[in-house]
Image (tube, rainbow, N blue to C red):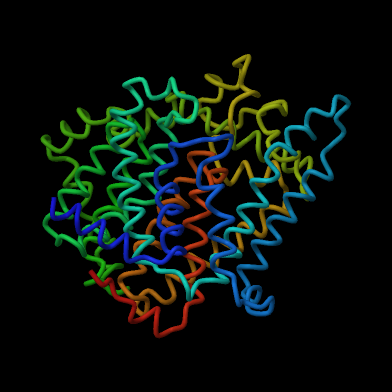
Length: 420
């Protein structure tokens, strides 16, 4: 009861803009309400106009990543304007259906950078923690008790839920650690890892484990120690995994992850899920070579057909399937380069590359408070290779927050503390 009262007291003390920011971030980490669009879409205009008051165009638009984000939006428009010949016009229709999303993501990143000094990052962290925790409750319990019969409630898929965990676990665990201490945060990290394993996502389970536990000691890590720790994990990790109890635990939680770790040679040769992903990489590269600059048009990967070469081991199990050309790309990078060509891919690489490079170069100078956002970006970037998740707005929200942090005044970068 005391905790509930404290939460209400904190909420009542927020400004109207901070309340909007809190709800916006909450629904990014818990996107379960849909009214044509995710409910956060309707909060964004209020957030936008509430925060940009008094900011001139020169101040609003002045940073490199903002221009990359705008170029990304323009690349999406160019992709639509240059769709390969389509006698039925369906490709154009499919592209136009998703073009507003790409423009929205471009505006979102540009906006968050512009108002970076006005954002309360503590509120963002708190909202992400609450949203992600509610997402777990929703995925495993609430969506199975009849809520999905109501149209506004969205079904969380296994891939979507896993991606939420990958993106937001580092921020959520770090916030909880600062609020309740490291020991209780370890318990929370374990719960998130269990949620990831039980969701049956192999890559997601591994990345959530890394993201959740790495932030527990992020305040003690310098770049040198981080490198040593990673090397130690690479050297001693295989011995740890050979412990019978560890293997049995992983197998009981997620057999797919167990096979990936302990029987990776068979997975790479025979696992249909892995082989389909390899086939989609091949398809995407073929489409890119045919339409290198502007791609085949947004939202058209699954309706485009190619003649597969089958130049990878195990191809015979998948490339002859009747529906192989109607399968999702299962790979965000392949999806972008195939659908948007270089006009879309280059700005995207510049955005992501700028964020990751900043984190690596300034690791020791960044406040520990901000590092979980970048760890989330690293985990998300890896997971992009296994799922077409770049089309989720909450991925762009995390990208926008990381981009905003990059351009904060250096004193804020170094000294920003979590006040509780």
